[in-house]
Structures are given as structure tokens and as C-alpha cells.
Image (cartoon, rainbow, N blue to C red; front, side, top):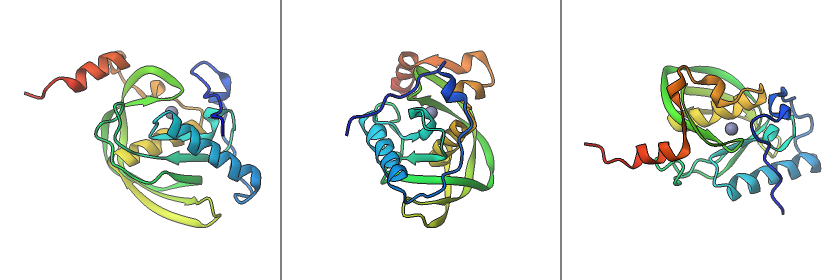
Length: 177
Ligand code: ZN
């Protein structure tokens, strides 16, 4: 399967509000989930949302794994979440560096809640509830923002909290004294 094009910052389709999915088990929705899984894996991403491939639907993949972009990320099997709803969000707001496949070569220091309880539909069409903490909670909140047309640079609270990927790599490779 060929990877679809990932929309880049400035494309107005990234600013659309995503709609809930009706029939999760339809062939069209199943094919879209497969496309998202292929794309996030091809790009070594830790998450992707359907609006990034020009589908304004509430489908996201959470696919945390350690990589050069996120060396500390926990390993998990990629997970499709459809029509997710935040049941509860709490814990301290934690700042962390984020990137996005739609915002190449930039990193932002973004505050996110440390713990989020989510009700969602899985790709079999079954209702599920899950609690995400720390990095997984961060990925979820980032992808959920895509459903509202929000991108991480909108969330930084200070100009110096937006840096290049090269500067970020230099920073994380510095030995901690
Ligand atoms: Zn993103």
C-alpha cells in the first residue's frame, strides 16, 4: 500500500474540525485505518490523526516506540482509536518536547496533562476505556488536538519554546552533568 501524502503546516485542511465516524466496520473506514497505520510506521511516527491525510474524521493511531525522534518513548503495539472522548483529564500539566509529521523540522515545548481517561471505539467497533499517562497521554492530547484543527505550535507559551529539530537533537545528545 502506498503511503498517502501528509498535509503540511499551512494547508487549511489541517484546520478543519474532524467529524465522528459512523460505521467503524465499513470497508472505507477499515481501509483508512490501514492507511494511517502504514503511514505512521513508514514515517516512524508515534501517532497520526486522519486529518493529517486529508480525512476530517475522528480516527487516530497511537504508536509509541523508541526512535531517534523520541528516544525515551515506551514501546507498544500501534492502536487505532475512533471517536475518542475525554472522560477525565488531570494530573499536573507537564512540559515536554513535541514534533509533528505535519510540522517538519520543528519542536515545541508543550504543556500537557499527565493523565487522561479516554472512552473510544476500537477498529472492531467495540467500546473501550483506557487510561493513558505521561508520554502516551501526551501523544493522545496531541492527536486529539488535530481533530479540532489545533497544531502544537499553537500550544507553546513562549517564543523560545519553538526550536529546530537540529537544535533539539543537539540538546538531547548533550550528556547530563
Ligand atoms: Zn501531529
